[in-house]
Image 1 (cartoon, rainbow, N blue to C red):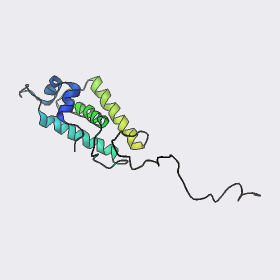
Image 2: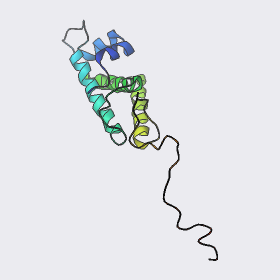
Image 3: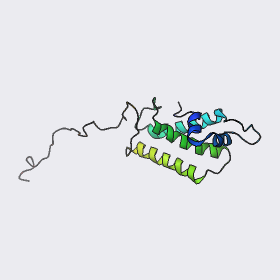
Image 4: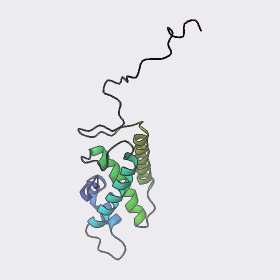
Length: 144
């Protein structure tokens, strides 16, 4: 399952850029090659799942705007690399930020904004954790 569709790439980066990124020399340059765009998005989604797997059930069934944005940033870089282009600094920076954020999610330092779901490793809503009574306390160690 992909967290974005080709139209999300067009909406974020423009049709002209996507036409250039999804077509190869000698091919028609009048429309976005949606098959290539979708393949890059699928690959980016699989990469995202690798980061999310430790904390979330993947694939995430309801992708948030945040997840769609991360997917588009990674897919854009993948499209530039696949087309033999050197990714621009802007594209590289966006993809690095996306991956860094996903790494923070994997480490439990950040959380995705997912509608109606919580990660598997979250603490209770109160933030309080209960455990067994103490064996060693001031009272039990008195006199030692």
